[in-house]
Amino acid sequence: MRIIINREKCIGAGNCVMSAPAVFTQDDDEGLVIVLDPNPSDDLADAVAEAMELCPGKVISTE
Image 1 (cartoon, rainbow, N blue to C red):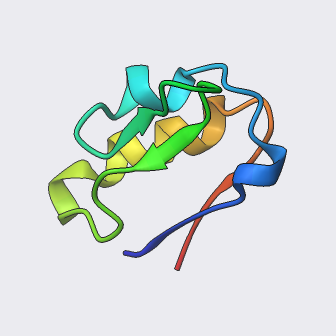
Image 2: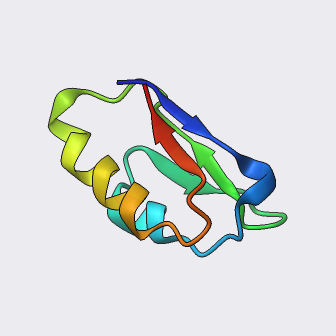
């Protein structure tokens, strides 16, 4: 799995960080999403799926 983020649409809600803190964080300036692990292991797939579902801006996708 490879994570793709559209930071231009991110609103900084932080749901991704709460769902998958090993994969996502937020920048200190604007609170926008940063991907810590663009190719997370399969054991994080459920957490990434939850982050995608809970993202109000729908800025997270995977390949």
